[in-house]
Structure formats: C-alpha cells, structure tokens
Image 1: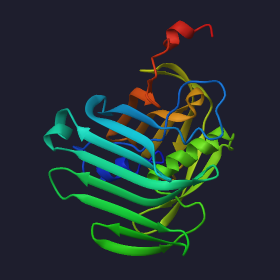
Image 2 (image 1 turned 30 degrees about the vertical axis):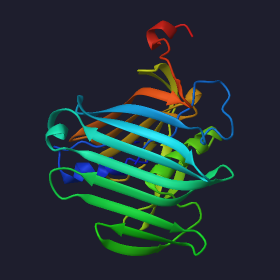
Image 3 (image 1 turned 90 degrees about the horizontal axis):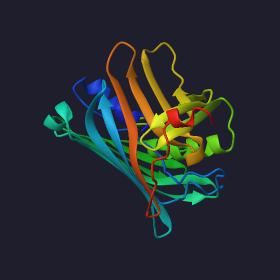
Length: 270
C-alpha cells in the first residue's frame, strides 16, 4: 500500500527525501458480504486511492487485479496530482504476474518503476520455482537468490496477508519478502478490531502493524473484515518526521460499482 507490508514504496521514497510522495501496495477488493469465499482473492477489481503527505493531498493511485490467460496480474500506478509530487512529476508503477496454487498466489514476474525529476529507480524479479532461484535486478545490478517456499514480492505479500486474516491467523504473522539483495523475514501484528470512517462508509476493520525494533518508522493498515480484509487505509512514516497516508475512494468489483454505506455516526447503535 500498506509495502503493507508495504509499504516498500513508501520506505524508498521517504529515504530519498521529504519532498516526495509515495504509493502503497494494496490487494484485491470484493463487495461487502458477511461470508467470504475461500477464493475471494481471485476476484477481478479496479480501485482508486488518494495519497496524502502530512494531511495534504499529493497523488492518486489506481489498482487493477485481473486474469490474463492462465495467469493473474496485479497493477498499481501512482501519479503526482498536487503539490510537490506534481511538480516533481512523480510516478510509481508496480506489476506482478503469477498463478494461484490452491489458495496461494505464486509470483512469476515482478516489476517496480519509480520515476521523478531525478534518478529513476527500477527493480525487477524473475521467479524460477522449478530451480528454486529468483533473479533480481535493481538499477542494473543483478543478483541471484535461493528461492524459499512461500517467498513473495511486495504486491503478493498483500494477497497473502489477506488470506491469513481470512483464515483467522494469530496475532503475529511472518512473511518472506524478496528484497533487492536478500529474502527478508518480515513480521506483522494484528490488533483489536476497530470501526473506521471511509469513503465507503463505516467499516469494521482489523488494524495491522509492521513489527520493528528500535525504529521511529511505522507502517499500519486497516483491513475491512466484510470486504475480504482489503486494506482501506494505510499509513507509513516516522514519529519525528513525515507521515504518508493512503485512503480508498472508489472501487469497482467485476464491473459493479460498490456504493458508499452509512457513516459511523449513523451506525452508533449497531
């Protein structure tokens, strides 16, 4: 988003400088319903999010999950529309192609392009599951890593996080994330349920935070339990610095627009 977990895009932009905006990797979205099907992840969608820096609108992010032949693809594109992000011609693009093996999404090809007035950043990963290796290219530097079962890219991590929440995973969840030069163990903690006001109305959510030690950085996301645990808000920043936030504004599920529901004030007696 939310690399949730992600918040990897946010981390990179914040390290470049406080002037920049970022987008977060998010997962797929399905209509509000009480019961979530086991295959809820494999549901086509398009969604739009607004990205804020220190409370000020800076960019718009669009996401797409769709099936192409035997594979599924997830696309994310963020563009600077206001403030410094617009001036810097900020653009962030991510793409992953993969296949579902049962309930698990197995990435095959991942691409991340970050562009602005300054040096571009490009990262790609080719997953060779037959030989248990992954080829990573970051700004022209190539490295080969030993691929371990369950390893994911930043976008696939979001799908796996949703699946874990749907299965009632414990408070602490661990993921193996393919980075630029290593496969890193990342941990997230599910918090107590919380009602959240959003553009889609008042939603029951499960907040999730990334576990860090001795760091002023924070990453949090709010997953709507009746929207198949999609992240409807994501935050990333430093307690003593910039604060980035991503909020859902629109979504279309399999060609059907999801209309806003009543706000939290109207549901005070629910």
